[in-house]
Structures are given as structure tokens and as C-alpha cells.
Image (tube, rainbow, N blue to C red; front, side):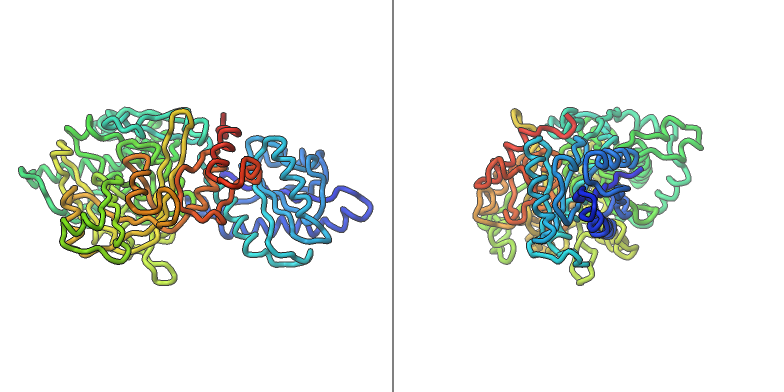
Length: 585
């Protein structure tokens, strides 16, 4: 059963005229909220979020308990309480510690849902239960059929973030391999995954891939289909190696890479076809929400790398057409995999994994290339480049309804867009100075200027997890300039030039300060400016945000956070996150 939003209609419990006059109004608010959520919010598989309305209005604890019992059987992970009137706060509130909570109180002077909202927020704060307040800016009539845009936006923001939390429960982060090259994000901190995300860390040695290749534990029919598709659609690119592999050796690398792709998918998610082939245990998979592949160096020193597998699995399509991207974090950086999950759960888009590799100042760009930066690049740029794999959607070939280039929710992509992504991607024989076992690196460049959000999760000793958010833009520069910069790193790897949105705030006064504040060697990005949604999601998980360039007026956290201070919202966020502690502790 998918995680659901439970909607609770709260009512003045006084019988003999008052309650009876409000039943229809309060329930209609619940149905309005349900229609909004189910039309605007989505699951990772692209289907609409499901809501459950309490089978009675709630005028006191007896009915609150009845609805709680109902919700306990419906996999409700978050509740939205709605009311158009005064009600009894502590008697009607949701006190289940495992549900994320919001209350929508109607802004109306005669039936003061806002008064209940304020009383209930005080009760939540005093009881130590964070809750989100939804209160329209303008006064409404009780019988107003329209939900104001600001209220609608808050309902959707709350519901989408809560469903992102709910879809992680009872799932796993699947480590394929261990720590890659001493990268701290590759150390699986089970406390973080278990206590903050509700995920079970699962561990699979990379030798399991070899076992499944040797024993042919994969769907051979799908393998033949995938291999034929790869040969027809994946363009061979630049080979920088001094000693070239023979065509026969490259063909064997392709065969292995395709098998690897199927096997990594099956390990993380499972595959019922394997049961029919006699591999029942393997068919189960590890119930992974997402996973990571170590690769370097114990694997890549003698076997084809995981670049093709990661690039295709993270993209919005494969040989079977469009499908939900499977997040596979490069170098088993589970913290960056988490950032990728947050991005995908909030947008439906594939997330692009990248090294936050180099800050290029305007002076440096001109010195190395002879070009004086202009446009978005005038203050310098950051070279985002992964070691051979990234979701192909990062090229930016998709177009939205306004004709703007973008990255789309995976279910909205088209066959023509998939074809164009493949035409603009080369699969280069891997640089064997890095990848001694060979393989194929996906090579592309982001083709268009688009709004992007760059995200990172870090763990700080003494604090715990923190999130960094940088809204900005992809930057298109002259081809010769891009090639010069690209070749100084690795010309066979996917590239995006990124410029953060600059504001008068530490970390964002210039591009160099942003690069200097970034907390690790990796980051993940998606299309659009989604910083405000990430901040809301982070607060639900009790993870403070250590760096962001989001307008403070757009920040939406639980109402009680204002009790930790209003002058410095970042400090209040840290204090509240520490006080409430991990969601699953």
C-alpha cells in the first residue's frame, strides 16, 4: 500500500445547532484539500498521491481516536487537519508521533478557523509536536468555493514533501560495494539512514555482480533486447587511451556493461522474472529506494566500470522506453544519493550526479581560453563533471509547454526526446589511467541555459546531517572555450557549467564564496528552483539547512520553529532540529 495523506475535518463539538450547522462546511474543506492534493501531487512512479478522509468529523478525542484507528490501516504518513470554525485544540489534534502534521484554518472572522489554528499550533508547540500552519492571507467567506492560491500552494508543498518522507519508510539504501577511495560520503552511516530517513542500510559485495554474470542470473531475453538497443543507439565517442582496445575487446566490454546494468537494477529493486528462471532468492532484490555502486578502485582496476549502468539507470528511459529512474550513486556516495532522492521525489525528474570540480574565475577563463566571460558567466562559473556517468536528461533537450528547455518528470518525457538525448551523448572508451578495466563513460554537455538547484547532504560531527542548497543556472559558453576547460579535466566525462544565484548573503556574494562553502566533492542537481521545497522537506526530517540562497519569505517550516527565534532563521533551524531530534530516533 502506498503512503497516503489523511485529511481530518475538525469541528466545534457543541451539539444542538452549532455542530450540525458546520458538518457540511468542514467536510467540504476536507474534500477540497483532497482534490488539490490528488490533482497536483505525485508518487515517484508518476501516479497521483492518494488521500484518505476521516470517516467522521472530529469534535473531541473520541472521534480523533476513531479516525486515528482508521488511518492506522491506510498507511497514512501525514495528516492535514482542516476547519472553518473554532474547535477544542488539544481534544482534536493528531498526537501520533509518526505522522507529519499540518492544519488549515479558514481565514474568516465569523467562523474563526484561524483561532483554532492558533490555539492548536500553541498546543503542538507545548507538547513538542512540530506542525505546519496553513492560513490564507485574505479573508474568505465561509461558503467560498475557491481555495486561495496561497493556501493551495501550501497544501501542495506540505503534501508533496510529506509523501517524499513516506516513500522512504520500510525501504533500503543498497550499498553495492563499500567505501570508494576514502570518500566520506561513501561511508554508510547507518544512524543517518535509519534514524533520519527510516531506511535500512543493505550491503551487497561487488562480487555478487560477478557471480550473477558467471551464472547468468539475469533475464537473457531482456539482455538480448538491451544489447541490441545499445548497439543501435549508443554512439561510440572519443578514445583518449594511448593503447586502444581491439574491436573484440570493446564488444566484450559492451556485453559486460549491459549485463551489469540489468544486474545492478535487479539487486536493488528485484525482478520477478528471475523467479520464473529458477532464481527465487535473487528475484526479491533488497527493496531499495535507491542505491550506490562503489566501483573505484577494487572493481575498476580490473573490470569494466559502472558508468554505462549508472548513466542509463539514472536516466528517464532505457531499452524498454520511459521508466522511473533508479538512483544509483556514483562511488557509493550515499549522502549524494540521498540528495538525488530528495530532488527526484519533489520534482519527478532524474537527478544528475556530479563532481563539484572547479571554480573558474573570469580572470582564469580569459587566461586559459582568451575569452572574456559575459552573460551568466561574467562572474565566473563552476564546472560540474562526473567521472563518466550522469543522467542523460541533464543535457536539457526536453521542452516544457512554454517551449523552454528543461528536465521533465520522467513520465512526461517522449520517445523523440530520448532519441535526441542519445544523439547528443557519446559513450567513450573509459580512460584506463582511471579505469584500468575499461568500460564506457557517457560524454555530453548541458546544451541550454536552465534554472537548476544544486543539492548536497553532509554529516558534521557534533551536529549530524545538514543540507546545502544552491539555486542557480546552467551556463552555456562558446564551444571552443568549453572544450578547452573540458579537456583540462577529462574530455570523456559529462559536463555542466553552473552559476549560483548571487545574493547579499554569506556563501552567495560571489561564485568563489559558494564554491568555498560547498561541503564535499559531490553534488546533485535538477531542473528548477526548488530550494523552498527542500527546506520544507528538511524540516520534516529534522535536518538543518546550512547553506541556501532562498528568499526568507518563501521558507516554510513547522510553526513552532518561530519559538526558536525569528531574527536568524538559520540558527533557529539548527536549534529546532537539535531539540526535536531525528524523526525515527
